Image (cartoon, helix red, strand yellow):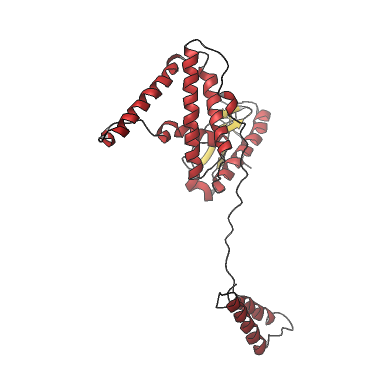
Length: 270
């Protein structure tokens, strides 16, 4: 296992691990979320993944290195597994995490963010004019949800070490869009001095991670002829070997052909 190392200039301990060779092409360049001792960092993966342990104490560094390794293991597993599909509830829950983080950061003093709802209404009006105009394709429109919210979706997936399929990502973008609109309306309300109950907060469930998809197993078709041939080879090996009689082999293969014909497969295949 890798060990923590001390930065030569600051004296702070760091931890690093080389990216598994079979993951380098999919993992390199990706930014991931690592939580150690309650502190969140978002390092980018290169040939190695490196994080600060944020301590100069060697004993504490060793303890935090164990946390780091557990985080690294989950990250490698997320790249190794097949993409998972999310339910609508899971997508709404992740959008809710985004909503609550942004609300906590902005609602006490919304400032310019209080204008987000008005800006959204203006963009909606522009999109409506585009749809109604024969020259709509030439008009400048709003950036796509992917352009506006893709980074937030990536952050949420990284936080939970998830890799999702294309349909789930599209669903996440839609739910993040709805959450962003709800947030904009709340901040508009807060900007007007109304700090009454947040009517939207209760609609977001707690996120429960999906079960990892089992790895796909390649299924190779095996013919009855192959089974018979393998048995024929096995019988002639070893001490006191006794080969299958040719007549027995012909009988087995004839039976296999009859069975395959009955199943409509032909050629003695399973």
